[in-house]
Length: 381
Image (tube, rainbow, N blue to C red; front, side, top):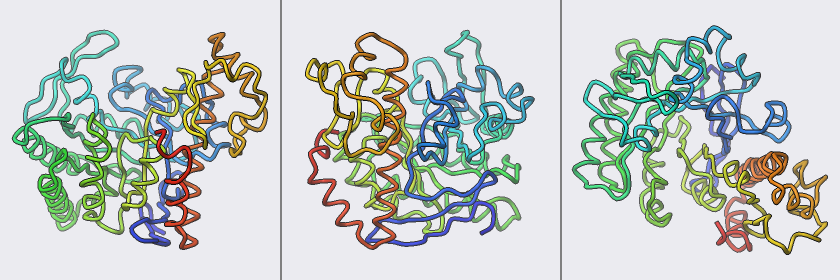
């Protein structure tokens, strides 16, 4: 395989099992990527991430650009050296912060005016500046700068965001020159199928024009602007058609989704990659994923429960620690409680995607899907 080639190894219905080549090794799909926003998955050592099966870690351009700064990370040899993680890394462009920090920034056709959440300093990012920052950070996969719209939103507003995101995609692709790194375009369009298809059409045109002129192609495609407040059933009204309208020979990445049942349903619709802070954020609040559904470890019923956290789980936490001990850590607000639950929750999602992949390769994904949807956990997420 050549660098940034994606090989679909098997399909089962619309579900796909594939392998993607990066400068820091291959990764297989479907997969869940732990989020290390500030060059760390909170409380989890890089070695532990590899031990529990993590293939790709995601970091965030906005946060790293504000602190410690892209130049410092470049001086350290890039993110891989800086954080001591030898596997593939993906950086989000900061486009989600354009959505989540909307009250503190201003958009115009040339870029975005940002204010640091750390020291209040002001910055202006053009798509070209964003690419320069991400190339300094040195991740294997980088994302275009885009505008993510909230739900609900007027269709005219979403349409303008599609136009702006397409223009920025073209400028990002033209500005991206690092050969051991690839750029993903991002599909926007809210819950409007016609705008989603228009966004894809524009990205395909930009890609083809770049290749024809001797430039780079997009290495894959993010599907942004979902999981922004809409009911999950609304997302699934269009997600499958959007995913399958993207090229078959490129990975499809549903951004910011980490609900176990949503992952399983999205794989069935043809999505390959996922990320979310949900497993680690909820872990720090004392919540564990399990095959029985979500478990609130502050619950008194676990005080004398010496069973493993999830008897069906093979993670190192479940192999060694009881529910009673984990509840004790959470109640005492010991940092180890959040660390152990983070490790477990990440393993749970990583392994869930491994199981989905095995089922696709075996031609039995529909059975896997039905088993999950009929399980006690399915309706608890």
